[in-house]
Length: 197
Image 1: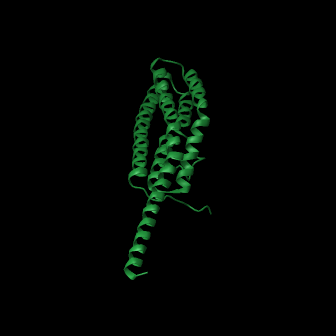
Image 2: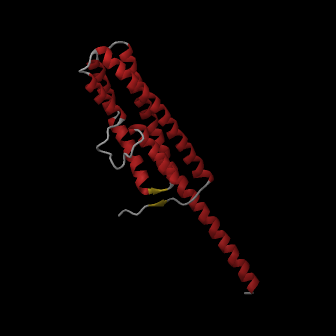
């Protein structure tokens, strides 16, 4: 084989390998997106809607002068209804953050955790830290000993702030999901998994 033919053949094979490698990278990130991030987001949507409604209902019940004991009882039931779904979503986000070495996936997972727990280092303090809904119930229990006007005012302020924080956190989840979706298609790169130590 002539040197020029050998050279062209080698360059062509190298180009084919690079193209195939790029296709595999795109497929890997797209597959990971389609098999993990997309189903997670689809499962998260109704859970997030219910979670925000949890606080909005509490706020309305306080405005309607419901007793704190009745409000707490209904909220505890509502919270318990989605416990399994919430935990599944939170754990999946934690697994993504732990095992997927890709910043788009990490941002998405962190936004989910912030939605449920607020902007703190939850991963390190996971069991010691209360979710927003549990914190609200604890706040209500603490306020039970106060006069009705006092606990209502304190709780209304607390719930209004929590609702605003959740709405902003949800916007962040959606933003990072859309960025992840876009990057899984337009900026494909191999997603490396961390080695389990």
